Figure 1 (cartoon, rainbow, N blue to C red):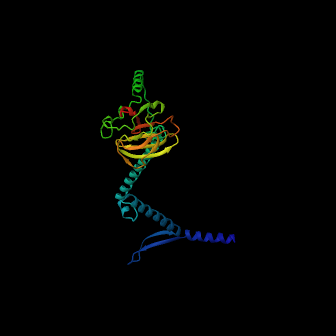
Figure 2 (spheres, rainbow, N blue to C red):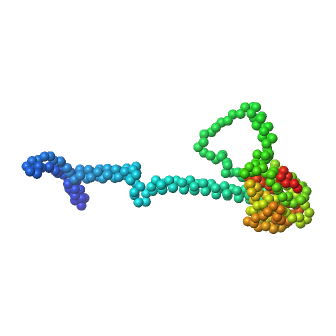
Figure 3 (tube, rainbow, N blue to C red):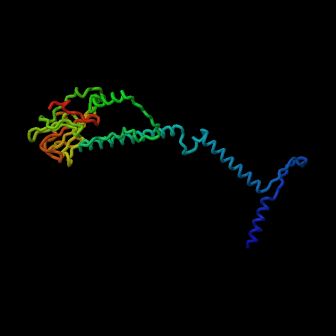
Length: 290
């Protein structure tokens, strides 16, 4: 059986290698003009080479000439431009969503008495940047320490609003008439003032705005938070009762709560009032007369 197969393979190989002669004759005189010696194997090799050459030429024409735009389903120059623009817009939208999520997370941290984060501006995780080494002179270091000591928790650099209006020019309504028992102490994580007033004293909003939070928390009890113009936010904690719900608009002087003693972080009936601008706590005493 094996010998038959070997003979069959040998016969096929001889057929492929068998030489043929293609002669070109003059039609009138039958004179031999030329000839070409070929075999089946030569014809297959030449045919395969020509097929590969045609495929390569077609690919180059489609890939590097404008003819590719007439192929159905292939994007033209205008469509490619729109695709790039949409990709850039999508990237911008993703960043805006991330910044919005950070904003709401910072609001929750403020309500819980924690320090807001600023990770959207963090550049410590950037890669591919060359390390830059800065050197400081002794005099420069001394001056830097003096300036940093003077400017620590100084808020004058953020007192200008986005429309150029100074925060001191705004008319802040007093939330509640009372005595300040615990002032603004950012070093001790106390980002507002504690006000003691009469029993069942009504708490009023300090500016026009929209209620963005009206809830109860374990640490600060009944809390209401209002978003104002110029990126200002006011927070009222430890209330006994809330009069407004989330999403409602309020005007300066509207009653929004009743002073109380709710939450774990309290030692008696009082109002803890905070004022924030662009995510930075402000000392309310600088803007409101209590």
